[in-house]
Length: 471
Image (cartoon, rainbow, N blue to C red; front, top):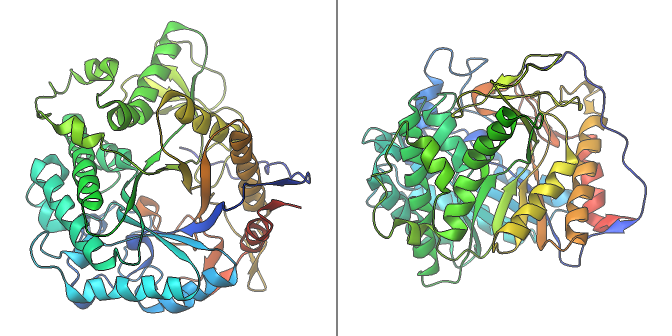
């Protein structure tokens, strides 16, 4: 999407007194490849993201994750930062190539040891760990054997889940299997923007199924382990509306909602893929890769569900009249569908700021699916931060977080069983294909010195968490 050179700031935070339910979880989130660095340390093997970063032009600034935020060596001070903000939960991901450098077989003791220390450090600071098993860093050795296009990868993922829980499950209770599998499938295999950088729509559909199968098999493994586990999955969900009531726009919204939202939710909670999207995908694949018992595994019981929310979409079909203003953005995997700017302020990513969409997303999942308790596992915004005397005043980010928290509370007031919120992200980091050009953190990272500095948004968020709302 195009990014305007300037955009109106979101409205200032409201001052009304409101509070979240007692016991609401307040945390921050990160991902292994984005912050850890040390990509060749202690037996870690290359991931698909290490490989993609070597491809000229794949990452906007030509950077990679070899250093990132050097969290692998600075984890203690990073956890001190988290504790200093008064947050009591931390969502992090575990690097599959650190645990299973060969993709399967004997685990890497040094890799497991790092997460031993991290989990112990969290607990020592009174912070509850929420571990994500897959945040996009597939071992390259498995990609060489077909990656998520291969059914075998789903079984390897379940093995990795069992290995990790066996080691950490005495201290980690909350597990997420996958983070945003839509991105792994469609950005990774249809548009090629994400690792492994492939561009085949049929492969994207196959990968989507094997990702979900891996989730189901891992869920069964985690529930079947010797230690109690609360298992969830994390989806990126959007509120999607048609640009007009024209048949072309209405159908565009249907297709986009089907691929982005219902494909995953229906499989997880109804044990079936949506028939209309199966029909849409028939131009690429006959779904013959779905075997007996797959959807039963995919729809295994979940204890919680994570929602990553950043924006909402207005969909236009190419058969509809073109709107005035900026050109719409074509959407991946949905031919003849474009996203129409809705006139709202945008972040540095070019994403519309639509807090009300979060309320609608949470209410829709609660209403239409027999979903377990919900968590907002990522929500935040990239802005072009300005450093003055070593500090960052970021009122746009403060307003973004405040408005979305109020939208979350609106959903709770409407009856949604929402249990917690994790801001994205604890710190600035490697933003995938954008490299280090986009900053989502509430803590600034100086990429030259790796010095960490809490931004004004960190203190504002900490105050809301401390008060469990607004006084």
